[in-house]
Image (tube, rainbow, N blue to C red):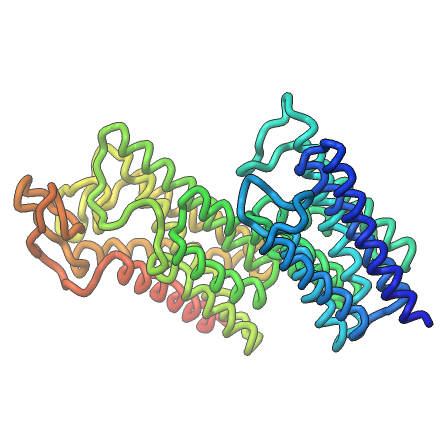
Length: 481
């Protein structure tokens, strides 16, 4: 009897939501409002289904039924009150996809159903009110990212927090206020950075997973920073064109390696490198606009090979630590990222130096070309290396002596980078202007090979320099322990 009630009440409530939205639409209410009405109220479907059907095939059957219904409605435009004139994103279909996906998991892991309630309510209430408030307040309501507004984002956060807090009180999930705040923050993040209606999936699944982590995994706090901030870093990197699409994919892989292995510490060190590297790239671009030239082969938008060259070694060191729990790999990991930042800062800030010298060839050289060193760039490199080591020290994963080892290894890795850049890296000469460059095309014409090994480019030099720094730090650590 309870199962039958679940089917009847669940289907009846969903159809009432659609009927109410249709009535509003016929009365002249805009689609923007009628869509959000359905969006907000249909989330309470979970309460009915969970109460009467619990976890299992019956819950899944209702989700699949409405998924097929909404796919048909989207395909043949059967429900104008929930369609959109502005884009082709089937947001309502994604909503049903999100529910169906978690319902499938619930058939095998019933414990996921309570966290599922939080996930779906953050999607329905949080994301729904974000749209309503964002559209209602048009004055002094700036966009903070893409088309997401300030007051819409605040409404999302408050609604998601409130829904999580209330569900926790009703169902005794054991969540704290801090847990609810973290879930609301993730809901806001995923709503902001996910486009084309896919936020209906990402919010549901993301908030469900985080809630389950708080409820069932004691060590979830060890990974909380990457969970909450990774979506921001990835989205901003791509939107601001700091990374190509391939670079974003590779950055996600490295982020997973490091975050899973080293948690909050690993992500903070990786994130520090990323943020400072982007700022340095912006500084470099501004200097170039002022008339300074740079003869490196690649631009400011990093591709997948540049990401591999700067971050893959650190990711592999993190995985080795995860498998072995040997502290030497934390030292190597920290040194690899510190060297990558030191080299980035050295070349990015050094381009503004008045004089650049190639100490390995005993002559002045073009500003910004590999192998060149300046007092400004060298000092900036040392500061960057020391700053990264101090982050590791602040997290308590290394002592002060080990932090100095990381600093020294990273700085020497930067010097080794200049050595390779001067003596080994391929350089070309422009046939038109005669400049020495790393580019194979200059002044609109192919360049001719001048010196160095043709198969050694800047990415290879960066990778070898990182290996040098990590190996040097690991060797000194092993020798003194």
